Amino acid sequence: MRWHIPRSHPRYESLMLRERLVEAFEEGIVVPQGLIAHGRGEAFDYILGERSHEFAVEAERVTAAHLILSSKPIISVNGNYAALAAEEIVKLSIETGAPIEVNLFYRSEERIAKIEKLLVDHGAPKVLGTKCEKTLIPGLESPRGIVCKEGIYTADFILVAIEDGDRTQALKRIGKKIAAIDLNPFSRTAQTADITIIDEALRATKNMVNIAKEFKTLEREAVEQLTLNYNNKTILSKAFKTIMQRLEEATAKGFIIEF
Ligand code: ATP
Image 1 (cartoon, rainbow, N blue to C red):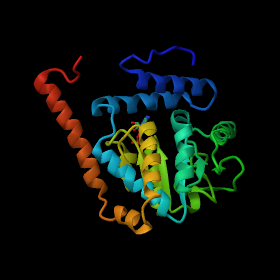
Image 2: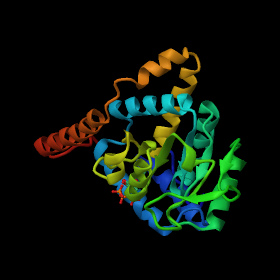
Image 3: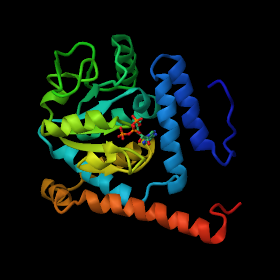
């Protein structure tokens, strides 16, 4: 860590995440565009109060259930997601049995290898990336559409995080069920996914690890039950309502944070 951030700093968690991303940028794991994308996420997190709301936890529970129940689930990991949450992604993979695929918008074999190594060093049992047989997602020009045949291409359920809307839409077009972690409920990814987790990627993944552990104590039927009656439009509406309520409160009082 290049800069010492005191634990007592009111924005400690947020500053730590920035440090992680800057370090990962210097290591060649995160691209400069990823730093900008993080800023957009931070802005929404600030508006939402930097916590996991009930609508996020509901989507996280349903996603964890699908990762456990699907016959071919996969966790798609990019540079930002790996930099922020490598340890928790690996735990989620272990708890749910879902393998990991490194899949990059700004793709280079060197960056894939670095992210793969980071995840393997954290104990990932299976990471698809450099060595898999490649194919293309129809509708996306190469190299943005390159995926592993054994992984995303044949998966029935895909968890993506901090993802671009084009790719999410292309995956939907070939019939994939998608859960997306995205703090911006307006984004095309958030609007396209079957399950939208409007939460910060590290918090969301930590939550899902705990949820998956809890599900291990339940019968399969009970976990299946959780996936029925899920309505993503309701989740998105609740997120917009929360944003509106926070803005209304700030508008009425002139402040939102109690110092
Ligand atoms: P879309 O293409 O889906 O309309 P976009 O153009 O914003 O969205 P990107 O620029 O690829 O897509 O940005 C990735 C998304 O990830 C943004 O919506 C941003 O709010 C979100 N995001 C960034 N950092 C985080 C994070 N740490 N946790 C959750 N979401 C994040």
